[in-house]
Amino acid sequence: MPIKITNIVNLQQIEAAVSGPDGANRLFIITGIIPTNLSTSTTIKETFTFLIGPTLTRRQFVRAIATASLNRILLFYSGGGPTQINSNWSVESVDADWDDESGQVEVRVEVFVSSAGTGSTGVTSIGFHATILAEMES
Image 1 (cartoon, rainbow, N blue to C red):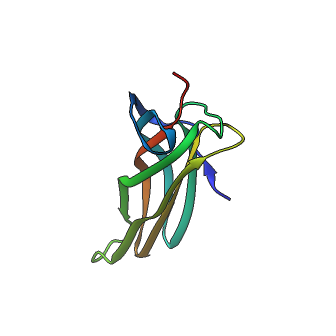
Image 2: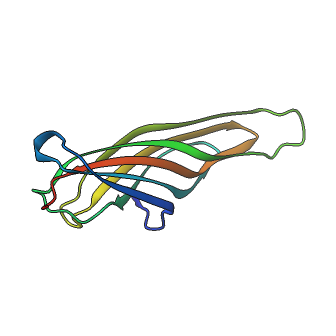
């Protein structure tokens, strides 16, 4: 089950008039940071979802894309001897599509984190960038 994020940090949005494909005449560019608090001493894969942008009808929504990057990474060494920790962090997938319940664009980010050795690792925030094409009434 995905973790729903409702507290986006540093949310920024720009709207521009465009002449795009499929009747699109508005472009929304949205960036922000989502807090994740994801940590492990083994392996974990988690999906985070969040809603962005204006409320649109199905007819108004044309297309959306998104990218995500690991924003803050945590590495904690808990041993007393030589450092023996192997960590791996990655954004596995990102998807953005119109959500029929809210009328907004839902972004889904899947993150993989693993740790082996005498410590733990995690990702405490993820940055994202999304664009939404819409056909709005003039």
